[in-house]
Image (tube, rainbow, N blue to C red; front, side, top):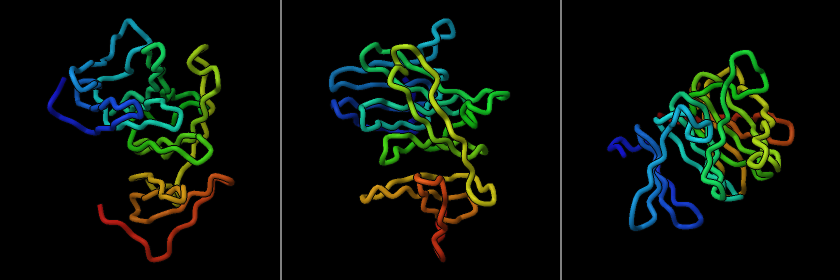
Amino acid sequence: SQGMVFDIIQDAEGFLWIATKNGLNRYDGYSFRVFTNDPYNAFTLSGNTIVKLFEDSKGRIWVGTENSGVNVYDKKTGKFHRILHKPNDPSSLSGNAIRSIEEMPDGRILVSCLDAGFNIISLKKDFFDKNSSPAITRLTLPNNAEVYAIGKDQQSNIWICGMDKSVYRFNPLNNGFTALPGAAFIN
């Protein structure tokens, strides 16, 4: 749908998902299907500039937008369910500009937001069926450093790079951080 591509993933079913400046594209090997925002349909994408894609262990596609929160795609119904920042709701997403998405070993999802820390998101079993609200915990890095990236290694350790150029190991048991002494990254 657009030549500016921000991210690409291949899901467990073999589909290619392509995040673009003007919608989400799914390629099945023969043709493209383009998903965009329809302002009259709350189960379409919340925004058209897609910057981050992630498939979780349950096969759900997470779609991060430039400034319209994150969407979770229900493959059974073809609907997108929106998770958004609401300024007066501390139980909502911490921001709408999505930077990274990663899954923790217990299935909860980490979503970092530009200039707004990061979030631990737990979806209830009836999230798709009843459009129930997710449980969201907001976190910030030490010294309120902005999150640059989140990743997971082969041992399922979660690593977070801060814009302070530090690298932190995240402990999901106590939501704590351990800075790696002498570790730094160059962006």
